[in-house]
Image 1 (cartoon, rainbow, N blue to C red):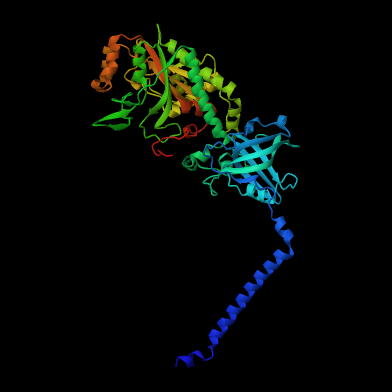
Image 2 (image 1 turned 60 degrees about the vertical axis):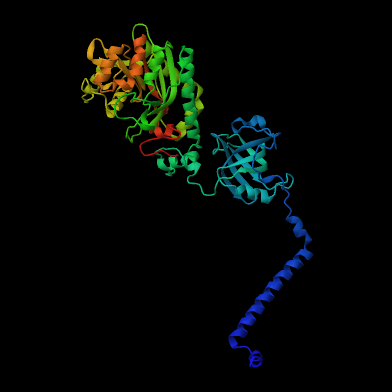
Length: 532
C-alpha cells in the first residue's frame, strides 16, 4: 500500500510548485555566479571601494577622561578671522544645519551665538572621500562635532553666518555627541525674527513648546545673549554696591512667618510643624543693619504664591535686595539705589553692546533711555498726570498695571526717560514695617522704581522703633509671636535705615523691551509650570 502511493505520479499542483522552486533556485545560483565572476574579472573594483579618508572621520569614542587627544588645541568660533587664513584649526561646535549635494556638503557650525560655514568636498589630494562627505551630511542637527579644518577667507560675505568673512574647509570630522534625528523644535525656527514683515517667514515656535524644550530653545543666539546680559546685571549690581562699601549677605529661605504678611506665601512641611518660603529677605536685611553691618545686599531666590498668570509675574524669581543705614533722611538711600541702577544701565550699554544687538535682531525694540540723576516724582504728581490723561486714582489707592503703563508713557513723552522713581506711596498699600510720612498720615516714606512703565523695585524707610513696629504689625493682623526675634533685634538699638528689592528678571526684560518675563527666566516657575 505504501509502495503504491510512493510510486504514483505527483499531482498537478505539486508539479507546479516544484517547477517554481527549481526556477527560484536556478536564479539564485546564477546571481551568486555573476558575483563571483565579477570579483575575479574586475579586481580594480575592490580597490575603488577603499576609503581614502579612513581615520579622518567617524564616531569619536566616548570621552571618559582617559587622556587621549590632549595635544589638540581648540579655537573658539568667535575668534576665527581673516588673520587665520590658511591656518589649520580644531573646532568643537554644534552642527546647526547641513546640506549635501553631490560631492560637496555645506554645514553651519555654531558655538554659543557664533556661527561659521563649513565646507567639505571630495578631494583625492587631501584624502577626502565621498564616504566622508556623506557621513558629514548625515550627522543629525544639533550634534556636537570636532572638526579639523583650514580657515579660508571668503570671496563674498556668508550672509547666513555671524562670521561672514571666513569659512572652514574640513580635513577631519568627528561626531562627539549625537542629537536624536527628530527634534521637537528647530533652533533656526526658534531664532527667527519676530517682525511684522509681510515678506518674512511666518514660522513661529510658541511659548509652551519653547519652555517644554528649554534646553534647545536656550541655544538660540538671542537667548544666549539674554542670559549673558542677565549675568552682567548681577555682576554690575554686586560690583557697584561693593565699591560703595556694601557687604553681601545670604539670608534664610525657610522662615517661620510670612515676611511680607498676607496670604501670598508658600507653606512647607517642616518636621512636626509648618514653615514658609521667604517672600523677601527683608527682615534679615534689617537684622543685619541692627547688627552693625551698615550696608548690605543679597542676591537670591524669592517666592510668591500669587496665582497671577501674567506677562510679568513668576512664583519664583531672583531678588536683588539691598539695605543701608542713613544719617538724617531716607533719600540718602533712595539716591544710592537710583544711582546704582543707572550705573547698571550704563554698564550694560557699554559692556554688552553686541549682546543687546543680537537680542534686537530677533526682538526689535527701541533702545532703553534713562537720565542721570534719575527722574524722581511724588505720588500726588503721578495722580495728577493720570488725571490730566483722563484716569482717576484715589489718593490712598495703589496704581493698577494699566495705570503704571500709562504713567510710563506719559513720563517718557514729557521727560524722555524710560526709568523713573515714584516716591511717597500711600501708607495703606505698603507692608507693616514701612515708616509713615511724618507730615502726612496717609502717605509713607516708601517708593517704587519703574522701567518702561512697569515696576522693578519696591522699597521704603523701615520702622526701627520696636514699639511702633509692634503696633504696625498688629494693625496688619500679623501674629507677633512669629516675628518676636525680628522685633527683639530692634530693642538692642538700631540705626534708621531703608532699602529695596529688585526683580532681576524684570530688569532684564524691560531693559531689552521684551514682552514676557519667561524670556528672561532660564527655567521659569509660574502657577502652571514647575518643569523642566
